[in-house]
Each structure stands twice: as C-alpha cells, then as structure tokens.
Length: 305
Image 1 (cartoon, rainbow, N blue to C red):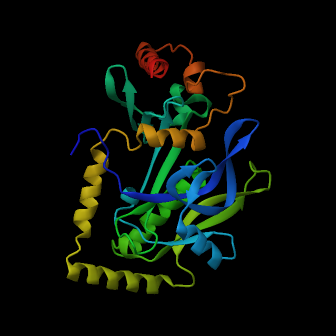
Image 2 (cartoon, rainbow, N blue to C red):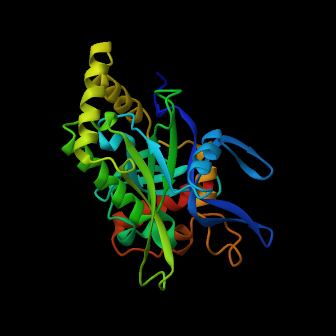
C-alpha cells in the first residue's frame, strides 16, 4: 500500500443538494430544495445524472427528497467523517484539517501537528477560509455492495444531524448499523439568520412507514445471513480505518478543486485577485512569538503552493 495515500471507499457517484451555475461570467454554487444523484463524469453542462436519479425521481413526482440507502460500515465515523478543513483555493490542496483539539497542517517543513482552536479562534481561518466539512458514504441499490455514493456538506445542520443519527442508530441496533434499512431525507427549517425563508439540510431516517422495531429485526436477520455466508463486517471496518489513516488528508488535489469551487468559494473575488485564502491575506502579527512563527509558516505555504 502506498504510504501517504488515503485509501477511501470506491465512489460510484455524488449526491448533492445544489449545483454550480454561471452568473456574470462566474461559476457560483446555488442551493436547491431537492437531491440530485450524479455520476462521476462531467460535460459542458455540469455533472452527468446517474440512472438512479431518474428512477427515484419518477417515483416521487419529480422532486427527489428521499433516497433509500444502506451504510458500508458499523462504525459511524467511517461512514461519515467531519473536520474543520481549510483548502488552498488556488490549487485545491488541503492545507489544514482539525477536530477542535488537534490539527494536521502542511508547512514548508512538512506535515505538522498543531492545536486546533476551531475556526472562531484560529487566525489562519479568518474570513470563512476554514469550515466544518463532512463526507458521507452510502450504498444505493444492490448492484455493488462495496461501491458507494458520496454526499459532501459544509452545513452545520446536516453535519450535526447526521453525526447524531449514526451514533443513535448504531446504539439501538446493537452495533448493526451496516445492516439497517435507512433513508437519506431532505428536511427544511427556518431560522432568524434565514429571515424566515427555508433552508434545507440532510437527515438519515428509517424507510417509509417502517417502525424502529421492524428495522432492527430486519437488520438482525441480515446480520445473521451475512455471518452464515462468511461476511466479516468487523474486518471490513478495520480495513477502512487503516485505509483512511494511511494518508495525511482524505481529499486529493483533483477532488479538492471541485470541493473548493462548490463549498469554499472566495466570497470577495471582485475585490481581490489574490487566490490565497482570505484568512492568510488578513492575518495580523501576533504578540506571542510562537504563534507568530506558526502563522508565518502557514502564510508562506499558501504563498508558495
């Protein structure tokens, strides 16, 4: 296995609740009130729809707001990974990833481990350059039992809800999360910040009208069938954990460019032609010598990347 390369679940397609649109000669992200399931191929009009999109959409009257899914792993943090993430907006490379306690950051001296105070307390994260960033892998259909579709989000409501649901479903099912019949569902809410208009986020629920008791019984039955056939779920989870840990960052430069365009756009491109993270441009000198030194190294990285 190549060291330094994160081995992630095979991806068959994407799940999105938005799209890129052309406005005034710029490509900008636009939110939507429904899911879109795409392949991993693009043409001049954007991402090419996956056949699942059409079949599920027809069954729901043309508004795709729920997707039947299963999960690959029993461990929640293997299905859904969320960290504070900062990308170089010019190259798409991950620069710094943290969990609110510790972080991994690229510097001229290589990868270093530093404290992570979260974006609110980090000088490098000023201006929205660093955000919570989550990636959820799910199974759709039965054609490929190990091929997943990925949903990416920087939305706090989606991240908090998905993390809670996965932990709860693991607990109530007796650690049979990968065997539960589940559904990805789009929900709406209004907040003071949204000025009463609806904002949408993603949730994981039971399918249709199925009760929790019935879902658990189905998961237990599937788990017993898999064990009888020799399916080793614990070994699969361990292989995934080792694969994620094999690389410093999950996202590579190719994927990072699309992630930056959709989720980390430079909100001030009219005023600044510099493609560096806004946080790096606005950083101020620190009175603490150690903090100043670390900040300077981070700034040098963004300038030379």
